[in-house]
Image 1: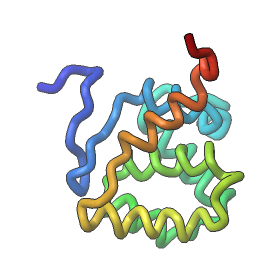
Image 2: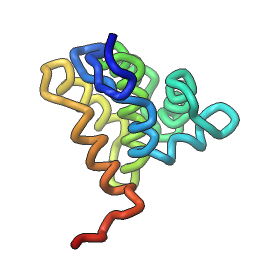
Image 3: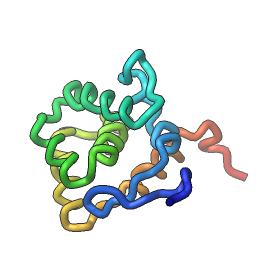
Image 4: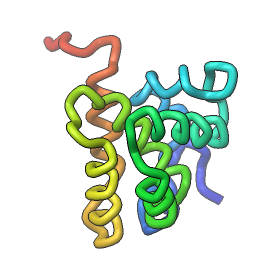
Length: 128
């Protein structure tokens, strides 16, 4: 039984991360959860469906990501894409590329999440 705060292997061999870490890295997704909050993985997956549509990601691209990465990881990637939406020309194309890379074992969510945690940290930019 893995510890609640450790990453575990999920669909497609990708590691899944604690919901708290995902929300720390991707706070914008919470507004799209049921009643404007995300407290469970089910809430995050519901929010990801709303955001998927808003970002113009096709249902088939998202379904394929869920099959390859697992539904929690696909929702996590959508949350990450939402955070970086201003820097991504085609969210659907980006998700399809990440899905192909995940199929080949060439994509890990951890570095993407950690970069966003650093970006969204309240102490960013403060160096000693």
